[in-house]
Image 1 (cartoon, rainbow, N blue to C red):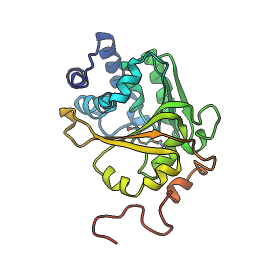
Image 2: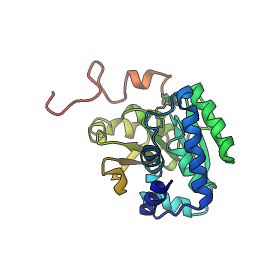
Image 3: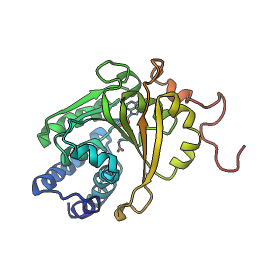
Image 4: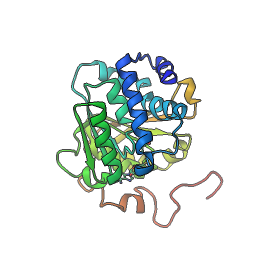
Length: 256
Ligand code: SAH
């Protein structure tokens, strides 16, 4: 885990031998379960350390997140569409005091996650098998989280409808994104504000190992999400908020 140990220094983090050992175990289990649970296409030790572990930890570049972590308050974090545990599990390894909820609609991924949490001996992790649209409607999850995270789950504005309902007013939503976020944002402001969110900023990840192609979109939850949202499973993706029926979900530059 040398690449990871070196990479996190740019986030101002230092990983103890115990934590590096936990990432070794994580890597081993990811490899063992990969074929069965279809967890990731990136499986070399270098790829996993950089594109999964380090990328998940890039949230430590956000001052708001670092402040929340160091405040000593109990933080509730949910990672929606977590797959093999990204970005939630690496954050939990680094800061075991946070309370973490992992949501995924795939039964096999949930089985992997339950196994992984046991192998890592982590306490304070809840794994939920379900779709975001349905889980976010349950009282114990709706508007309950200080931080709502997702990577590679969906494009905006669909992603906004999946994530913003989980967030408490005063909390934050963070979407891990590539350069396509610029196009996505152009068509999402209406949806984000209809759900009670406000874009604070788009942060370009600085870590040199990630090569400048990664972004974190930081959204603040300003007002409660209307009870209508999220709509039934499948509807947010079928009829994205703020987009007119019949139009393609994204307009490429030059098309009208
Ligand atoms: N966040 C992980 C996995 C991304 S793949 C990573 O960055 O590596 C997307 C994951 O979201 C898959 O595991 C899929 O099972 C899950 N998923 C897709 N639609 C979902 C939904 N509506 N609710 C919950 N999980 C969903």
